Image 1 (cartoon, rainbow, N blue to C red):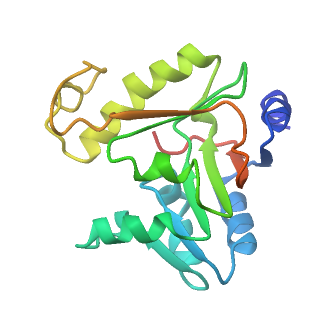
Image 2 (cartoon, rainbow, N blue to C red):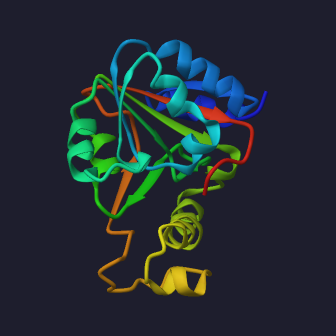
Length: 200
C-alpha cells in the first residue's frame, strides 16, 4: 500500500489518516462521510480536481469563496464558523509528518488551527516531501509561484514563474506559514492521502 511509512508517522502525531489510490475513491469517501452539515472550504486546486464540492453541495451547506461569489469576505467568515473545514495540504514532510501550509489572506490556515469540529486535509502524492526543509522549499518554489500565476498576481514569482523572491509586493500570497507538528488538541483532524498527483 502507498504511504505506509508516512501513515504511521502521521498517526503517531495524533492524526486520523485515510489512504486512497485515486481521487475518485477519496471523493466517494468524503461524500459519504460528510452529510447534512455546514462545510467551509479553503481555495484548493486539489479539491477542484477531485470535483468534490458540487457533490457535497447536494446534501450539505458549503461556504467556498473560490466559487466565484462577489462577496468573498462574507463567505470566508461563514466558512470559519462551519462545523467542518475541508482543505488541501501544501506539503507534508515524510521524515517527521509535519504538515505545512502557506497563505496570503490567512482564512485557510487559521481554520486549520481552531473552531471546527473536524478538519480534513487532502494531499496527493506530489505534496509529499522527504523532510521538513524540502517541504518548505516546495512551498516557496512550487506552491506559491504556481498559485500566484493562477491568480494573476503581479509578483516576481508569478511574472518569472520560477521561484520565490521573498518580495515585498502588496499582492504577495505567502504571508503566513502554519506548521502542524501534531494534531491540534481542540478538534478532530484527518489527513486524506491520494496516490495521484493533485494540485500544486
